Every structure is written in C-alpha cells, then in structure tokens.
Amino acid sequence: MERPRSDLGEVELPCANDEVEGSDMTSFVIWTENEEDLGFLMFARHEGEWPPAGRHDCVFTGSPHDPKLLDDPRGLFVAEHKGREWTAEVDYTSEQMTVRIELDAGWVFQIFSSDSGNIWIAARGAERLEGSGLFI
Image (cartoon, rainbow, N blue to C red):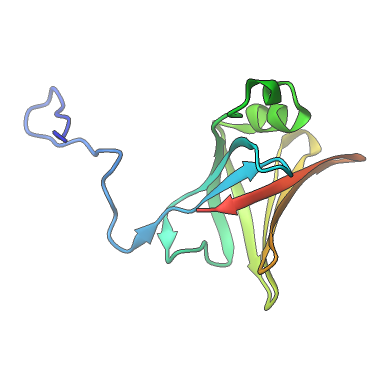
C-alpha cells in the first residue's frame, strides 16, 4: 500500500495500518444477548494486550449489522454515544475485569469480564440495557 503524501512535499502522513511498537489497541464488540452486533467500544493505545488498571480514553463506534436493531434501545444507545471521546475506569480483581464509563445524561456503561464471559450493562435511573460482548 502506498503511503499518502501531503501537499507539503516530503512529509509522510500516518497510515491507518501503521503499528506503534509496544502498543496495542483493545476493542470490545457490543452484542445483544444473541450475539448480534450493535457496535464497538475502542480503547486508546496502551501497553500490553489488555488495558491496564486505571483511566483510559475510549470511543463508541460502529452501528448494528442488522438494520432492525437501529430502532432497538440498545442500538440507539450506541448511536447516541458514538464519535465522542469518553474516559473508562478499568479495574481488576482476581475474578474479573470491570470497565466503568460515566456518560452524559446520567448514563453509566459497564463491562464485566471473567472466565465465564463478558456482559455489558448501560443504566440510567431505572432504565437498564444489557447484552454480551467480546474483547478483540
């Protein structure tokens, strides 16, 4: 693949497939409970395979694969929060990894990951959305 060039002469612009030595990007595929795609949560580059404990920039992206899910409350949730940068708090215990993101309008998005799988929950007051997912 040819590297894009700027109009400034010999300045090289980064390619989307450029790799940063020693850094990885983790993504979480947001699924319904039936493993239907709703979108992704992408974490900023970090050291190692999984985000270390602490604060990490992240962004919701993508859209449901099945157009019927565009009107589903879970699909609408991803659409309403995508394209903006958020801060995730990542914590580990001996049993699980927890990701917590305080969003706008009172929403809190959480991922619970353990040997038995991954679940996500988005809650605002009494309103609750949930599903499963996959870290890639």
